[in-house]
View 1 (cartoon, rainbow, N blue to C red):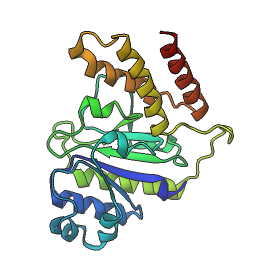
View 2 (view 1 turned 45 degrees about the vertical axis):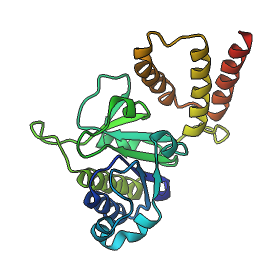
View 3 (view 1 turned 180 degrees about the vertical axis):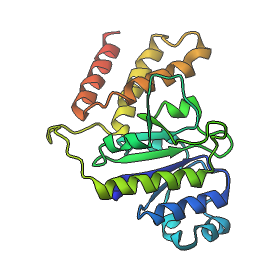
Length: 237
């Protein structure tokens, strides 16, 4: 296990103070990777740097993306945090299930905006959704509080246990970029045969397709095979 494999992703964060506090929480537990997606405030700014206190280095080396797809392209497993149960065919886990995650892979913890959290469309990019156990009558957690709870728990797991996995070293898991490329080819071919009907249902159908492919834990070889299949189907027409 390596702490360098862990990234904390803030999707559309709104408050500068929360971004700074998240950076501080990341450094508190000796992590170093902060990713922002379309922050609603100027990044970086003086408030962010002031709130981060001694974690200015985390802010300065953080990465800022315009969209979620690009932000997660090099991450193997995305764990989305949500206070709400989603009626989706996606694996729901709690903090104690994190011990089953292969932290030898690149892991990203995805957090939604302070006002609305993560949408179902954004959740569709994830392999798992994670719920932090809270008072059922008051589930809402501050963004930085959610992050620090997860950072502390993961830090403890990495220190206490080095999990062994029997999967062959010859098998390399597909990264998000490879899966996105395959999925784009699939969608292109489906568009050409006018599969997405009616048009107003296309966003939901795309969401369901991502849910299918991102949770399959495909190898890079399997991804190449499926890409070849989709390319061949396109040529047949």
